[in-house]
Length: 323
Image 1 (tube, rainbow, N blue to C red):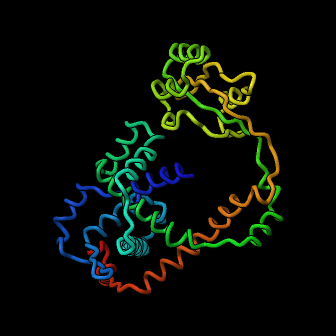
Image 2 (tube, rainbow, N blue to C red; image 1 turned 90 degrees about the vertical axis):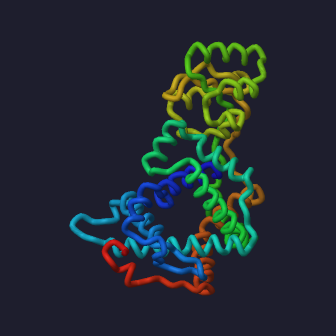
C-alpha cells in the first residue's frame, strides 16, 4: 500500500505540481513578479505561480478541453482552488508543528524511485523541465500533507465493534484468504550469471547477502521479498515457477522475463481459508476507514476554509490568460 502511494505521488508531482524554470522565465517577461492572484491568511499566491500551474494542467489534461470549445475558465477555477487548498494545508501543518525528517524524505525518495530505471526517471524529469532537487522538494510537501491528513482526518475516523460485525456478516465470503506463495526473488542480467547464482544458493550460500550484492531488481531493498503471490498476479512463466515451489522444492531454476533472469526461493505457502471476525477486524476497519476518508477529508478541508481569510482577484482570474 505504501509503495503504491509513492508511485502515485511520483506521477502527481510530475503532472500537477510539476513546474519548470524555463516557463517561469518566459512568464517573467509578461507577468510582474509582485502580481498577486490570491491571498490565503496573508500569504500571497503569485500570478506567475498560478500561470505555471494553469499551463501545466492544460498540457497534462488535454482531454478536459472538448474539441471546438474553450473551458479554460473552468480549469482556472480548478487550479486556483487547488492552490488555495494546498496553501491552507501547508499553513495548518506548520501550525500543528508537523515536520518531515531528512530520513523520512530519503526513504520516500528511495521507495518512489525503486520501480523506475534511472534513465526513465531522468527522462520524465527532463520532459517537465524539473531537476531532481525540485522533485524532492515537491515530494517533501506531499509527505507533509500526508502526515497532516493522517493525523487530523484518518486517525479520527472511528469504527465501532457493531460496524465491524455487520460488515463481516455481509462480506465474510469476500474476506476469504486466497491460496498464495511467499517467495524471495533475485534478478540477474544474464543467464550465465543466473546459473552461477543458482548453484551458490543450492550449495547453501547466504541468500540475503547474494540478493543484496547481485540482484538488479528494485525488491532487493527488501531482501528480494515479494510477499505473498496469488494466482493471476504474475506473467504465466513466472507464476508457474512460483507455484511449483514448496517445502520439497524451495528454489526455482532461472526464469527469463523482460527484466532479466529470475531465481525464486520459497519462503512460505498460505492455504486458502475463511478468517474469523477477530482475524478480519483490521482488514474490515481499513476498508471502512477508506470508504469514509473522502467525506471526512472534504469536511475537514471545508472547516479550514471557513476559518481562513481567502481573497481571489476574480477580474484577473476571468481574463483569457489570467493576466
